[in-house]
Image 1 (tube, rainbow, N blue to C red):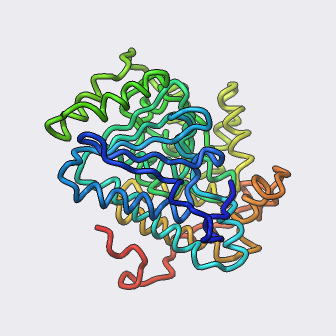
Image 2: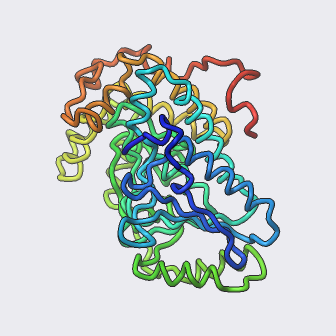
Length: 371
């Protein structure tokens, strides 16, 4: 995922986010398919500007957003933020890293509070920052190709972009399960988890998009109703292993969760424990606290909390768990991060609460304007 367009302003990044008005809808296409539409600071700014433009245009009744594929008009929605840029900027002490998170979280808030219907076509990979620009949608569409996850604990980060807010609102303790393990789920499972509203098969998307652009809708609600009428009907079902998830992930601490998984004696529990053990032990503690704190928070307060947390993730530079996690996954690609702790039981009780201490006063917080 090259970040050259952020570091080198001579590269034309305007092409990475295409937007236009067609009929009664505003259309946004993320167009960085070689990087699975991973978001750069420029892309965050282009998205924000497009949404503000559509908001003030009376012709636009609703906004549609999709990700461009390498071969076709649909493809992977968005794989998240540009983590190579995060690594480079953190080591260089580049202020644009802080700007990225401040502006990205403000964009997430804008989407959640948008005054017109915002319809997200979550085809293919939808992870991290891709969840941030889709979970606030008024209609969240998944497909038979959707691969959804918040895998941040595996790079020494946490599910940000409002992840505390939307994961904490999943049924039961699915939010803890998805946030701690980074488990990938499909479109049907996303609906069961409350992270999507309906499924439309990927092969039907081009015609549906074309119809939305050419239909003379009379209101934003009419656009939403028509899209919802296209959902594939299937029998309601329980999320797989939901009872075991609720039993294990309701426990008070990561160590107790891991011990309960070890005693479950099932293929699901073995796989879940293996995933948990690959994650940063420190960040597993941080994320469990994040999701539980966020259950009692509104969106703006959650995003302010996450802005505090992400500051702590990067400000240590070489000693940062996140910088090390990204190095192992995307820079050296050795897939062997040297975490600060070997296992969950090594994390000391006073380490993870520090992530929730704000480096700003309420009056100077970079997201003080969100309400």
